Image (cartoon, rainbow, N blue to C red; front, top):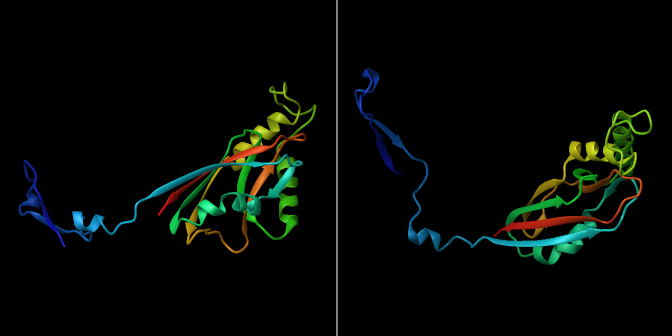
Length: 180
């Protein structure tokens, strides 16, 4: 272990003797860097077909599109970035479809739509501003660990595309993989 001393130009009385700090970290040497794996990157844009309004489990589709690159990573991170402002990504229940239905019901209940809604932005339709708000609530990006060439999510977790528009278009997700 390394030991170092801290010193001050004008020592306060309680620091009349140097403080010795033992570091728990070993300093890297040139020989240490030879055994480190070289980080690598991969990136792909996955296009999901237009979905009806609601929450959709898209993990299998995304994994199918990236599995060849994903398999090359022992350890790392996968970032999923949705290039849209009226849909969102989240991680949630991957088994019971009632959870997706209930989530859509909740979103529609807390974000008002229609003629009585207070929104000014309506030029793209009455569902557009509510879609922007819902998108901001869940967000457009996720990060998932990669372990041994697979997404390391919990048993009951899956990636959802939440479509907040009545007449959606195909959605693009930029998937960036980084690791060793």
